[in-house]
Structures are given as structure tokens and as C-alpha cells.
Image 1 (cartoon, rainbow, N blue to C red):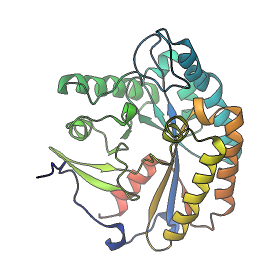
Image 2 (image 1 turned 60 degrees about the vertical axis):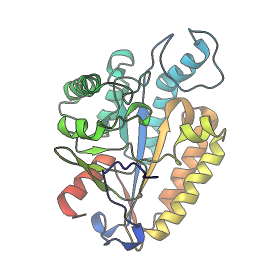
Image 3 (image 1 turned 120 degrees about the horizontal axis):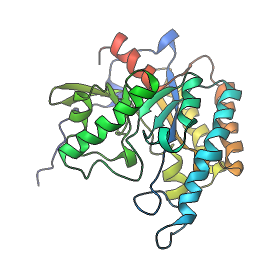
Image 4 (image 1 turned 45 degrees about the horizontal axis):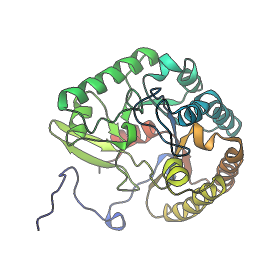
Length: 293
């Protein structure tokens, strides 16, 4: 049997690559990926707290809406208390349906990255024309709202077609977060150039853990701490990226955010001058300006 290949990047073991350092000689780049998402009432996709009934599925729609009304602002206050930056992964429809939310993250200097129009849809099932329109629609809104085009993209539901990296590169995007194949940035080939893949976590991600695997906030916090300990030790010999993926309707719940705060404070206390608290966009910039991969 001949296995199909994506031909986007070659195989490479992390232990056999040339080493480099992050700014100021640091070894571990840490960023928070804060998802800001909106959903369609009565149809479309959406994470579920419990099995939903017939549409309109008020239980699950309102639970997700809590994330934007309460959870995300609560997490914003936590990031302010800890003086931590983040990359806000923004559905462009948030500017219409949750006015002031994405703007609050931008006001504190956080990076705004593209995350489609809404998480009620997937781009990977679309035709090339439809996907191009989705990317163009979202980019136009984010560019207008922020006064500059976003550099990075995370697909709604981590969904890609066979052409997504090509279409993103052609639309002006510099990096993509959908691929979770590495702990270091890697270049991906596209039909008209290349795009950088910045590591985005699917293990340290509250949706797979809390919704998918039925773990709770304390378990998720323990996972963050355990991963940090291992990656901090490894980063003495090679540069690593540690992302933490978050959603307001999950870790913004009052019984969970205390555990997130505990994990982040632990990381700050034990950083040992080796941690670069940063954004996905800054990682992209540093690689492009300073490192030959």
C-alpha cells in the first residue's frame, strides 16, 4: 500500500535539528491562544455541554454565549492581573455579535489572529471558491477593525481542505496554527511560496480535554504544569513552543478559572529566566527575521 502524502513539510526528528535560542537567549516560548467565537442560533456547529435536543438547542447555545458574556471577560481580568499577553483567535462575526469583546483584547496590546467568520461552519468542506470567500470575508473585517491585516490563521474546528495553506499564503497570511505536528515552528510548502506553521496545542487545549475527554479544570491545570516542567527542562538544549488553547465557556467558568490561575502562576514562579511570554505572531516574526530553518 502506498500512503498518500501532504508534501507540505519533510520528516525531521526534533533531536537531530540545529539549535537556536529565542530572544535574550531564552529556550521556551509560551503563548496563550484565547479563542473568541460566535455561533448561529438554531443551526450550525458548536461544542456541547450536554447532548442537545431539537433546534433551537438553547442549552448549548446559551452555554457558549456565557463564554463571551462572562467567561472571556473573567479571563481577560486574569491575564491583566498576571500581566500576560495572549493571541486572540477571533471569529470575524464577533465584531457584530459581541461588540467590545475582541476590542478589549486589542486594547491591551494582544495580537488579533484570524479564526474564520464563525465556529458554526467548517472551511474544510467548502469548494475552493467558497473557502477563498470565507478567508477574504474574515480578513476584510479583521483588517478594518484592527487597522492592519492579521498575520496568522486558525481554522474554525481546525478544519482544512487540501488547498488551505495555499489559499492562506495567497491571501497574505504569514503563519498557520492548524497543524499540531511539532513543538517548533516549521515551514510548509505552498503552491506559490511557503507559510510558517506555529505550534498550536491539541493536548493542552480545553475543548479536547474538558469536552472530549471529560476532564475537569484541576486536571487540565495539572497537565499544563506537567507539560511546562518537561518542556522547560528540554528547552535548555533546544528551543520549544508551548501554547495553551483556551475558550471562555470552558476555562472561564468560576470553578475552573482558579485552576488556570494556579497553573499560570506556577509557570511564572518557576520560569527561571528561560521563558519568553509571547504571542504566536511574535514567534512568527522572530523566526522570519532571525532564524534559518
